[in-house]
Image (tube, rainbow, N blue to C red):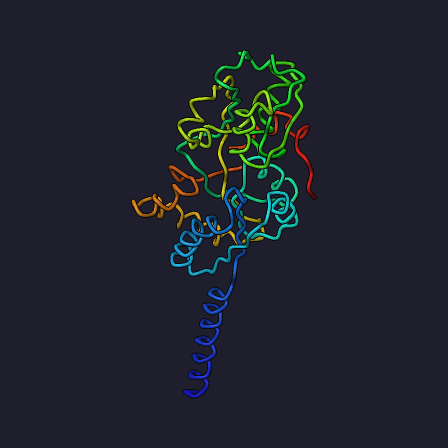
Length: 277
């Protein structure tokens, strides 16, 4: 009997160790919308993922995307267990693959700005009808899709879109007279050189929307999702953690729900979204 008891204990201990080892061996793939070049993106996110690993005991592998269209294809095909994406990406990802938002920035909202040269005669968005307007990319939410939607729905103004890949190129296009106006966001406008920034004038700001979420596939177990949320919230409790989050950028970390993004479904943004999948 004593031998049987020892054998049973040995089996239980081995099973427990296997469960622990399985937990540690599970690797979750994380995708991040490529808003920065690859090296900068890695320098921002790898320390955060390292922190998540230490807090949760799970392993997180950052998988890069060479472009936003490629990133869109990847999350549509559910290639990421977790992903940081723009708000309209979440609407699509939730509808098609079921992605669930976990955390987001509670310290700011996202909105687009429409700029012209400071000495331009254009004072109102409705004066842009039929003119070239520069945008960074078709599916840039605030800097492109929202601006195009409001130009059409609020000002009855259809424009000729000129896609120039980056926010910097948008502002340069306006300054060089290659376009009558350009779409961006306040953060990138503020990052321009004082000379260039002062040579531009904002003529319209879009409706504010809930910013980028960090989301998970529904196939990720609930306890894992809860552990990740808890780790993010703990990260926001320290100055060093807040410094890491600000690079994303997130000013104040908080929980997220799909209801936070309901307003985006009412804007008719699908008219301007270019499918890449």
